Figure (tube, rainbow, N blue to C red):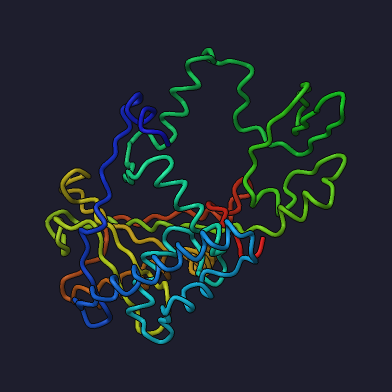
Length: 328
């Protein structure tokens, strides 16, 4: 999102300070900060290699292959795996094995070098879509019949003469239509197209990856907050499973929502699929077990509130991030 839109609609946000981090493993605080330098050295080599692949029009490969060639091989070192998750999976919602070396770097460079290096966390009570609603209000009137909310599209028929969009109780006709369905919707045939897409377009849709970010929120009594509220991030290296409730963020610190008692953890990919398909109770118990390993069992009370979305199970979304796979 461009800075001027955030400023125009006064979107509540705070700078994400990635240096504001504490490190943990299953035994509590643990200093494995030197691994960040090892990773960054390999990533620099990966960037240069991806640029060579792009400019010379060579065969793409996975980020894992690129990392291995650069000397970064975390394998059974779970602390190195946690650092890699923090640096890579958290950005792309999938593993290095699932991701394109060439276009992971293109993605990162165009995002942070072409657009903006700012990376802020939005926690506006109006919702992230406040700026979209604001822009819509510049050309839509109240109860404007052109805006059809809660209307599920079932079929789109198109030809050289125009487009007809069908929904449960009717249809809309136009000369042209812009399709903004998520990749997940297109991959799961939630909407049919008449005529069907040509094979080259369908191959493009099916070859890409649709991944999921799942943010799991917990609220604790403000007088029983057990983490350092001056820090933004807490990285956990599980001894067995990579990406197992790895990154916690505090919303109880300066610039966020002080004295709120809110902490949340992010999972992606396969772990998102697992938590989406299990009960809130199971997920809560797992998260609390991790927090009690990190901060001590006696220090972590039961939360007063617990909430997380299930983006992968929403028919109109089927995920929350599309990632470029290797070799495409």
